[in-house]
Length: 252
Image 1: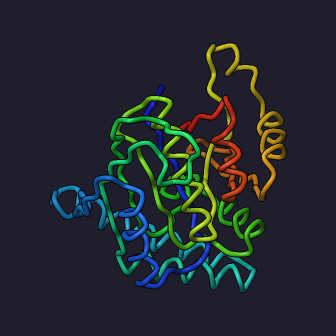
Image 2: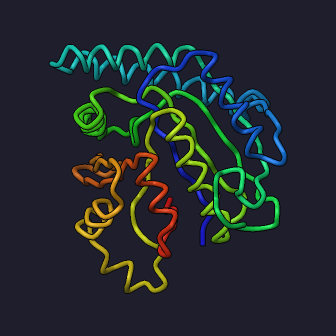
């Protein structure tokens, strides 16, 4: 298994109070909670890299805004660019125990499971590639009626089944709290290489449909020219149902 990682995509802009509410929520579900300075603020070389990336992302969003023919999409890209410019970044280390704080009906584990929780402005995949296109933001706008404004990334430091489950439950709860979506590669845990080779996009679509709730398939261009892939957005209900499936796994 790999370390679990899942991103919660938040469609709307957040107030300062709503951001602080995330800290309060984390305190209610974690046995240990430590607010940390983002790594970029502790390492000058990384800080310079993040600053350059932020400026490049603002430029990319401005170019996409100018290319778009839809006034609403242009407006959304401008709002996201302004959020990126604000340099908002909140980062925590937390320890979660048995999962009962997440409304789990049975103890998942008795150990303390460590995670990082990272809140900052949303950014599309492969936005800094020379071959990037507007495909992903166009698909998001078509599906959600808006371009996401923030993302919360949950990353587990351990890699057992319990770590994947707790990350999934946290993603479901945050999707509910913020009327947001869990962004995942919707595929089960593969016990064999053959099973992974035989899994198709149609299988993922059928799985998404079986989960109920509200889900969206989002296409994006990879860093390779003309190569297209898909991820899925699951609302709180669908994500919760996925965590209850015996095949549940968070692919990265």
